[in-house]
Image 1 (cartoon, rainbow over the protein chains, first blue to last red):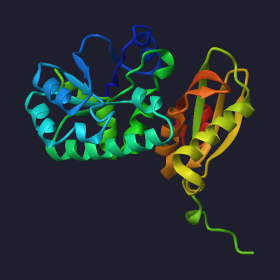
Image 2 (image 1 turned 60 degrees about the vertical axis):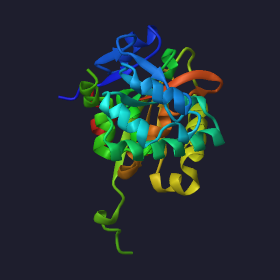
Image 3 (image 1 turned 90 degrees about the horizontal axis):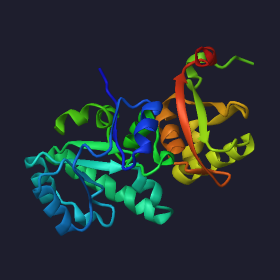
Image 4 (image 1 turned 45 degrees about the vertical axis):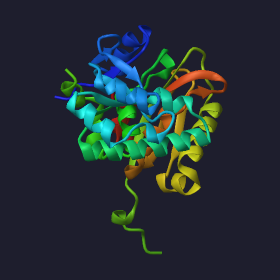
Length: 158
Length: 108
C-alpha cells in the first residue's frame, strides 16, 4: 500500500501535512543537510546523515558522479525540495530546473535513492502529495518514479 | 455535415481544486493567476496543448473545477503547485480530486 511521506522544517507543518493527505511528516526525526558547495556536499555525504537536500541549488557542478557514489555507499538519500523551486524566480528557476535534470540523470545512472520533499517553513510552502509527485515529472523523473519518490522511497532511508 | 467521430475527440479529465488562504479570494483573481502561471511554466504552445479551461469557481466554499486534456493532468497539477500568491495573498491551490466525468467529480 502506498504511504505518502514528507520532510518539513516547521512544527506547524506537521499537523497541516496530515490534513493535506500525508501519512507521515518528518520534522526533526531525520538527519538532513542542505546542499552547498562541492566540498561541503562531499563532506556531508561522508558523514552519517540521512538526506542531502538540494545539492545543486547553487551550481550544477556541486554534485557529480563521485558524490553520488559516496552517497550511495553511505545510504544517503538525495532530496529535491519544492521550497527551493518556489524561492527561485525567473531565469534563476530556469537554471535550477536545468541543474536538477542533470542531477537526476547522475542519480539514475548511479542508482541513488531520490525523494521529493516540500521542505516547508510555513503551511503555505506545503502541497498535497499528488501535486508534489507531479513536480517529479516536471523535473525529469519518470511516471512510476515520481510516485515512488513521495511514498515508498522513504523505506530505504532507515 | 458529417459528425466528428467520438474516437477522434480529445479525452478529458476534470479536476476539483480548493483554495487554502487566510482571506476569501474572488474568482477573477484565481483565473488570472492560474493562467499567468501556466503561461510562465508551459508557454503558449504548452498551454494550447493542455486544453485548459476553468469551468466554475464557488467563492463561498473557495472551490472550483477545471477541464483539461487527459495527457496534461500532471502538467496542470505541477503548475498549480507552483502558485504561491493570489491577489497578493499567500495561498495554496489544493487539487482534491481528478475524474473523467463531472458527475463523478461532484459525487461526495
